[in-house]
Image (tube, rainbow, N blue to C red; front, side, top):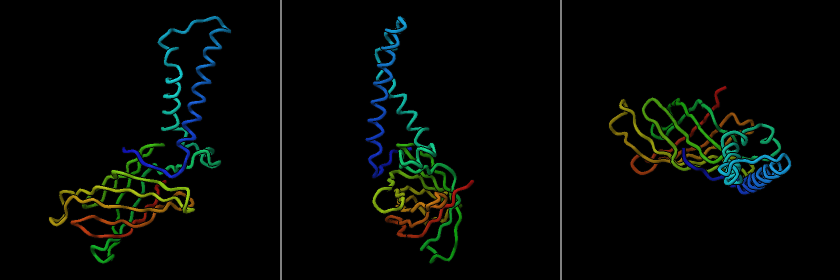
Length: 197
């Protein structure tokens, strides 16, 4: 997985919330020690603020950002794209004459993502990505990928880089858009990803 950027300010806002909660939890432990007259070992007390921050950040990064109610009220704007997607590709390589099917798997945390496409002749993996949620009124996923041919691919096919730009539907079940290949392939086409249940 690799980092991705998002145009929302939620990462700054959430990190501030995590920081404040970590300080409050560490302060609460100190107050509990005084009230109940017990001593916490130094190795637990010394890193308590940073320890709580790390724990809370990990919880947000892996789990909390995906909670539907927190997404619905807008606390988190990062869309959850995790899952398997059935994919249909039309390419300029064959004048858009074929509807090629492939499978895409997206693995995502709050701060990291990887998009993997597996087709009959090649596979590709994202290298950098961005998600735009603020300005266009639509959710836009853009990423650069590296494509590698399978052993059964034609000899003319070789490793190449490309770029994909996809728009997420309102029901978050379809990603559709365009792709462009870099030097050596110089193809373009359309992609439609439908999320599996």
